[in-house]
Length: 180
Image (cartoon, rainbow, N blue to C red; front, side):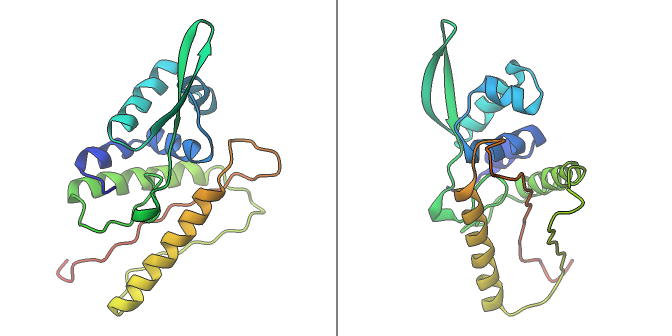
């Protein structure tokens, strides 16, 4: 699934980025997401509807709760398109520039927010680069990073699962115009 502008706008909100992360490890209802994120259930429902309308999360079940029906949603990494999570996609066709810019801004804000939670004793890997490399090297690096992100998403567990640790990763790789 390639994201269009609507899809990028859907994931370009910090709460929705957090939701996609949580929904990678487990199917959750709006109420569960609201509790985990410290927001109202109405707010969680609104953001879930936006993600669902953009095709980023799927309804995977329903359960009866106090006489009502709670829908459970899940984010599933699309194996054909590289990493998913709304947190980075291997785009086979060029995404809309405005959507990518919005997404980059959301990732940057989310990285700043998450860095406040970094454990001082944790293993940390980071990199920043504006480089010139051969096209084949670029393709190979993008493939390896995509594979690593798929591995993380596949290994994701529900929040606070015993024996797990909370981790953060934000990756956005792209080729740049020579002229700018």
